[in-house]
Image 1 (cartoon, one colour):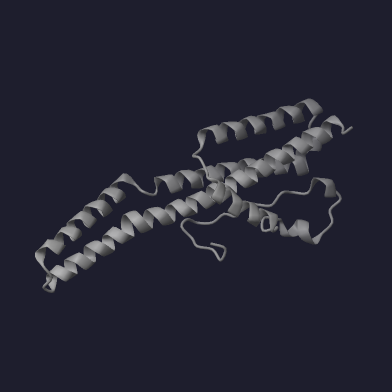
Image 2 (cartoon, rainbow, N blue to C red; image 1 turned 90 degrees about the vertical axis):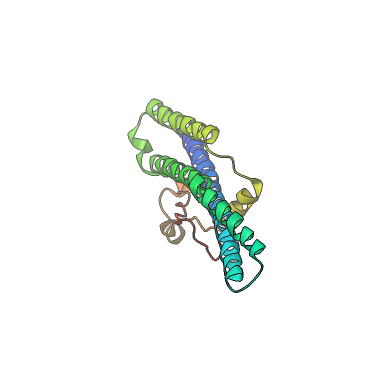
Length: 191
């Protein structure tokens, strides 16, 4: 039967892992939403508007100009309403969960031995409550984004280089990987 500290550290690692998967899923959703918003609601209407205006200018029937007007309105309204808000919300969610994951990792790997069992339990309980509060209040994700992230995590993409190259004395408590901090929107080789 594991000691109380071992059980608490195992729970801390679960919180870390939950934050890794959920946070990276939010980063994936942010990337997807940014691409969708900029493509369908801003770029495409702008291109249709430009093409229609040009066509009328070089002699096409004047009714084609209506496409330019409608496309301009769609693009303008989308920009005014902030089509990137959903992407920004997911990016913020990913950042919050990454911060919590880093705090949990630091406690589990470096600081836990400085605390009494009661203090350790209180800290880990607070991490769990923060995670639950984040999940309850952050935007929803989808299974496709989660599965994409799960494959990246399982491939070892998020493993610290220092953990992969050296055997540490705390091998039982190795860190979960660091976050993949990508500026949005940014295409990667994987996407």
